[in-house]
Image (cartoon, rainbow, N blue to C red):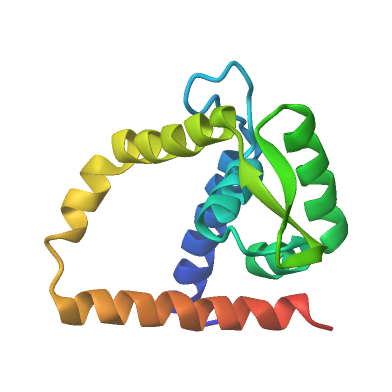
Length: 152
């Protein structure tokens, strides 16, 4: 194996491990008194940003199965972060919206990222548009490369 490839694989493995650790650590977004995992707060974000999405569409957007999203929705409903509703023009479909507690968590999530990411976002401004385009292209290409390991 080429030296660069080996170093790249090791660096990406280390990056993915940190990502796994982040996903395992719940956080109280918005000082709501409830610890939420990253995937739960991102579902809250998806519901706020896509109020016309049903469970199937939220699953497709998040990359989780419908069963996983259904369980997360049930948990978030029990915790009073979201509620179900139907539109007057479509009584068959069930949609979701944030409660006031869910809105507080949603806004707290953005505040949390602003605090944690301010330094990194400042560094991003140092890159030229060409460098940013290269980085994004590389990350997308590497994701496709890793996807080959997911499929049999």
